[in-house]
Image (cartoon, rainbow, N blue to C red; front, side):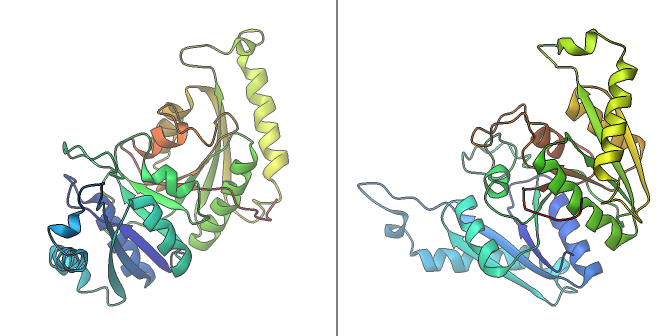
Length: 296
């Protein structure tokens, strides 16, 4: 795993958490690293940016700036390249992901005050969601700086028993086996934030927890054969409980499906559990889009 990594780079962030994580992964795994940036060049009926500066010249200038900015980090990563293209981020990313056979995309949280409607960090309808919706390649979102040389020894997989979650679990088991890591499988009984779920007030919560625990064991037993694992379940608001569980267990990575059973794929929302977890401070989160995987 992680043999060809694509890092989306931009200077418009206060901390370089995602680049540092990508550089560390590339060094440790001996992976090929592609630094990617898209220039949002535009045109209208009266003019284009090409009238100010030729597109090729602007691309070459940007490539040189990126090389200079990350020169110190890249000197011990011999197998790397820098790709700068003109166009919208998500569309250009999709092209290179499919053509290059990327197996992991690394993105970071945008913390700059600069307003750019097409930026890939910090907004709801982010390129993260757009890319995840159209590719099989997982996306790792890094918000906090990872310790240098950090290893993947504890993986937290959040499930809601949907088909996308089953696919993400298969990816999590592969990651756990590859790294000899412990896998925590966690299900949150969603009590609702603004509209409480009435069914959880009709019986003792322990009854629902026991049912969910039994469902996880029955559903995932085959996939988890030979993997050190633990099941967890309790009630709460999903994204807050996932973050707490990851903090309590000192998880190295969180695995989540791009879409849950309660979300409409065509309409990304700020209420999305996946987005709320991925963009919150904590350990890195890997977002996995649905892909037919046989492990269960």
